[in-house]
Length: 248
Figure 1 (cartoon, helix red, strand yellow):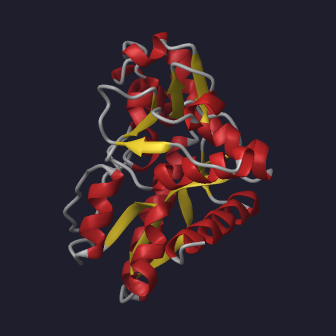
Figure 2 (cartoon, helix red, strand yellow):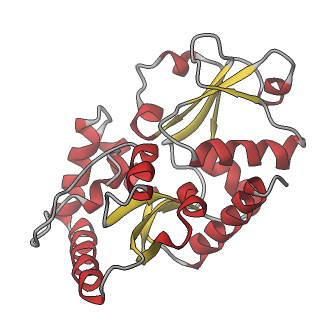
Figure 3 (cartoon, helix red, strand yellow):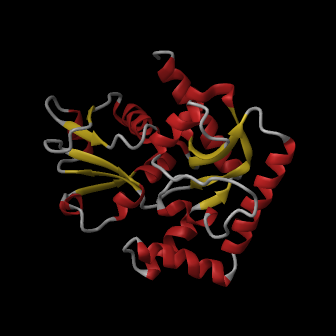
């Protein structure tokens, strides 16, 4: 399971079946799924094209939004368009590949060009942060003049939702395993909708250093059952990834 706070609704109730639960960054989990080390995973959607027929969805479950969500942001020392100038770079954390592709696609759509991406944060003009890092107000990036919400940018460009991660299982998972996992996911989401569940989510947010009000707002903006508005956005992003993989 992705270790970020946004996956907290799937960690409220422990599994009642024998399982080893692992936590990690999106890129790490993608590698482990590709290596056949995982049976089920809350997988970053940018990994789907790479894994192909090795995985299948575990129903309509994941982490999605339509518009501003706070935990995926581009911080910049200069106006966003100026990041295309020669010599300027954008730092993107190696913890993710999905948002790297998403950022490049948004620049293509709006400006017809993409910035130079680097993993060196020391001399970059902008930084793309994900998950809890993007909501850490003590970071120096919060003193930079530009902060652009990436999921909101996607929504303004496409009118579609964005799916950050989706639950998948291996392609050979049995119907019995799928049923057991589905029941567990549904149990977590049903509990998340109760007053006690909402309190637990607020507590997860405050543990990450947010105010209770911010935590409540954050989880209200995220959705964990994927609706048509999300799956259409997911299909569009997969179309983008196919173009990248084929050199378009």
